[in-house]
Length: 265
Image (cartoon, rainbow, N blue to C red; front, side, top):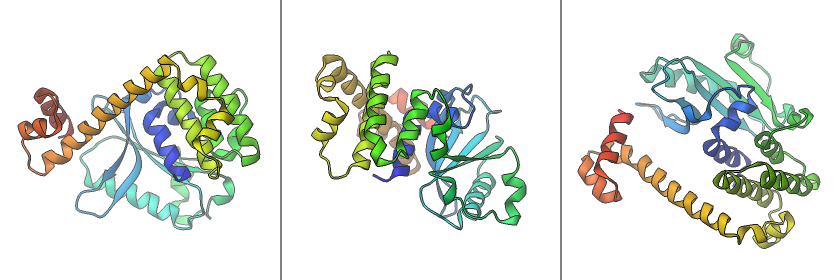
């Protein structure tokens, strides 16, 4: 799993952490859906888009980009995708851009043609390796910081975050998801270690055997399965299948399928 894939998974599961990262912690992450969008009549597919709930038309669309390697063409591509998307969709929402680099050294030279955009409030640039300077980080920001933590410090930082997660979070599902993300980051950082060794390193073995953890894991799987089916509804509808056919194929309630189709139109 690539490092940026971990961020995509993190922000898809906890969009509120993204808004905390950009200093907009007062925004309710539940009002946004973190997704990939395809631009009609083009070959563009844009990852990392936070689409607001249609019921909140004044909320801006957030376009995010995560960079863990140097990309000299980043700014041209980023703005091209944004403006093509805005031109080809019916959204009237305002927009914001957020570019996240692992470190400032990966930021390419700023082309003169984009200076006004980059100096405006529309575009925000964030460097993950500088987050460590923020005192009293939340669990969410600490998890983001862990992604760029040097390997020699990662195990200690991860264990500290595991302890905080177990002590400070009351929701068992959220606790399980955070712990799994911590484990995923460490697996990425220590590719030669097996999962059992990682569990021992983070002292997760006993926790994973508890009834509460197992129940939370089962509930999370069921929720994920339903979410996957609902994402498939729109695609099947676009292919010409009726709501009744989709409901039968996916074993879903017909009313739920119809509501999903209506909300996507």
